[in-house]
Each structure stands twice: as structure tokens, then as C-alpha cells.
Amino acid sequence: MNGLRVLELGTPGKLRTWLTDLTLAGTKTATAGLLSLDYEVEGEELEQVGERLVLVDDSGGRVAEIEVTRVELVPFAEVTWEFAQAEGEGYESVAQWREAHRRYWAGEGYEVGDSTTVVCLWYRLATP
Image 1: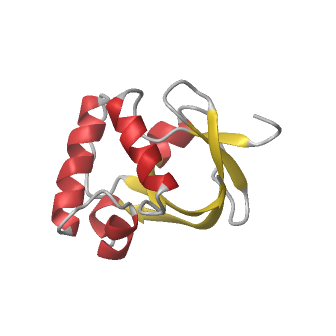
Image 2: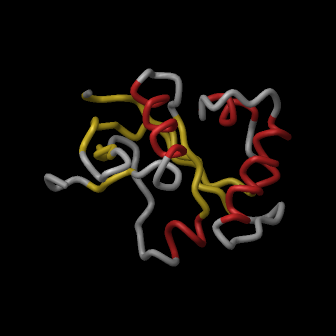
């Protein structure tokens, strides 16, 4: 979109709307993806620090531009509490983050093991 890659948070519907709203409020400054599912299967390159992405809403419309501030490839079992908090979704522990994400990805048809590579993408709101 306008020469930039697009970031769609979660799945369409209430989840995407909620995650997008958290980002616009500055509460959510990170998101997780699976290297094998979200990048390799879809033929997507990893984001780069400094890259700008267009954040889209549930209907695919532009709502903001974000700037990537950090990208880490981490085994699922080693995702940190710092990252879980940066996702801004109200987790009370990294164990709760892991359980919620296992459930989410299982719902998408993908079983996550402790060694599954997670792309931890950190960002900041660049332009509303």
C-alpha cells in the first residue's frame, strides 16, 4: 500500500479491531508471528529495523503507519516476559502469553512446540 508492506494484526473481526485499537492507543508495541507459517509459507521476508509498514483495519483500510524498532527470532519457549508485556494484551505472565498463543495458532491449524521459531516484531506508531 503506497509502496509499503501491510501489517494485519490477528484475524479479521473483533480480534483485529481490538489489536489495532491497542496499537493506536500506544498500548501494543509488539506482535508475534511464526517464521514457518507467516513468513516461509507466505513467501514473506522478515521486517527490518527502520522499515515502515501500513497498519490496516478489519476492512483492509489504512489506519496508521508503524516503524519497526526490533526484530528477534526466538524459540517459542524462550519468548520473554518483556515481549509478552509489549504485546499490550493484558497478560499476567509469560506462561499465560504462551497458552494464549498456542491456542490461537492451534485455531489457525498450526501446533506450536517449544522449539518453534517465533518472530518477535517490535514497533512504534510513526503516523496516525
